[in-house]
Image 1 (cartoon, one colour):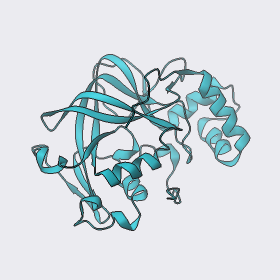
Image 2 (cartoon, one colour):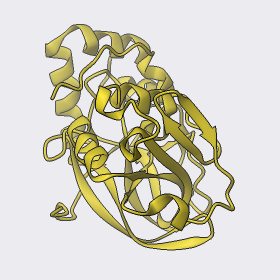
Image 3 (cartoon, one colour):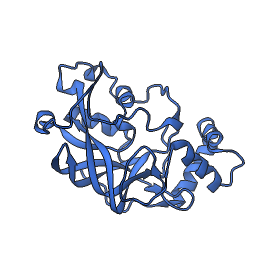
Amino acid sequence: MSVDVAFAWDPLQYPFDVASHSFLWSAGGIEPLRSSVPLGEVSAGRHPVLAIGSNASPSQLTRKFSHERFADPASPDGVIPVLTAVVDGVDVVYGAHVAWYGSLPATLLDTAGATAHVFITWLTPLQRRHMDETEALGHAYQLRPIEAVRCHGETVDRALSYVTVGGACLLGGSPLGLDSIQAPGSVRRRATQRQAWDELSVDMGCDVDGSALLGRVLSSQEWRERVETHLAVSCVAETRAPFAS
C-alpha cells in the first residue's frame, strides 16, 4: 500500500494545524468533542495511540487516511476520535531523524517532573495497521508503551507511542522541546521547527540558516545523508526495547 502522496505544506510549519481540543476526524472534516465525553463512548474496539506531533493534525490525518477504505464516516474505520491526554514523566522533543518530507519529527524523552499535554488517536485495528505503515514502523520509528495516561478525566492503563529509533537529537548541546507542546515541569528550552533547523545549521557549522539547510536536504541526497549522519552521533539514544505488537 502506498502512503507517500504529495506533501503540500511547508515542513518548517510542523506539526501543522494541531488542534487545542479533542475532536472527531473523518474524511469530511472534524467535529469538536467535549472534554466531558466518556472514554467508553469512543474507545470500544479501538487502540489508544499517542499523537505527540503531526498525527494530531487534522490535515495530516486526512493525508494519511486518504484511501477509500477510510472514506465512509458511517463506518468505524472512517472516523478517528482524537482526544486530549496528559502523560507524566516525559517531554516531547525533536527526534534524531529527518522525515521524508523534511521535518524533524517529535519523539518522547523521559523527563522527571514534566507533564506532557498531548493527544490520543483511538484507532481501529485497520487504522492502526495503516498508521504503522505511515510511520515506517521498524525503520524510522518503534512503538513504546506508555503507562497510566490520563484522558478526559480517566486513566488509560497503557497506550502506545511512536518514538524515533534514533532517539532525541541534540540541538545546541541538549534536547529541544517542541514549542507547540505544553510540558509543565520541564526546564528544557522550547523551539519551533524553524528554530530547530537554525540550531542544527549552527551545530553543523553551515554557512546558511536552517531554512536554506532544509532546502539543501530536500534537493540533495548527499546533504540529507550529511544531516542524518550528524544526527546519528548528536543524540540521546532510544534505549528501550521495541514494543512487540
